[in-house]
Image 1 (cartoon, rainbow, N blue to C red):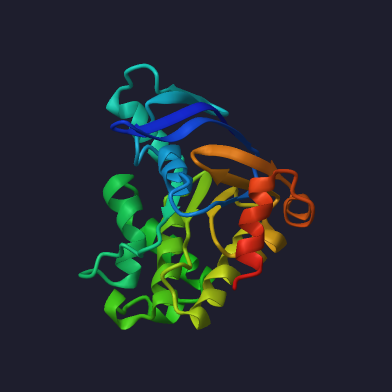
Image 2: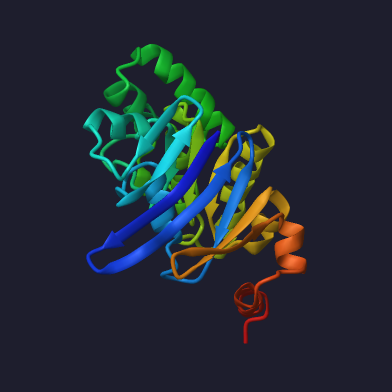
Length: 247
């Protein structure tokens, strides 16, 4: 579905991503792990051009973009429309209701029929368990509820790829489970997902493949049972030991 080749990203003299190669198959869940500053979030943001790579190729089934060449704004827009992004912070519009937040992208950006979009938005809010909150405003919701609205909003544009940037990191521990449940349900429905996460249990239970990044490179990747039970690289072992056995 998506092939990433030679992806590089620098901020000034600081090279954040170094020749990232990764294949993302349709219907698979990829969990990306790594220490702070390793390039995880930058990689995610490069996949939908929130950050523009300096070099590298992204190839979808029907569309390829080469960042070593000058790309038209229309090409970047086409890339962005391939994916839905769920952020650490919820980024909901505070002056719009839950329902209006979910409808915003399809109506304002995709110019779709408002009544059709409203019907789909209600169904998405039912999917994330918030149909009874659709007339409330973000400040009236818990953090977990706001994040579930964020997931519904990302789904509303009908993306091919769902991108999650540590979606539970800003939540109180008791609210994490409700967001992870929605994500597990999406995985079971066959959504293609790339998830930057520190939730090891989620990666073990849901991911088809785990990618460990450090220093802007992919150190190791493989199925969860291999990465968590028998990592091959010493750096992976060190990271997992620190995460799984905190002092």
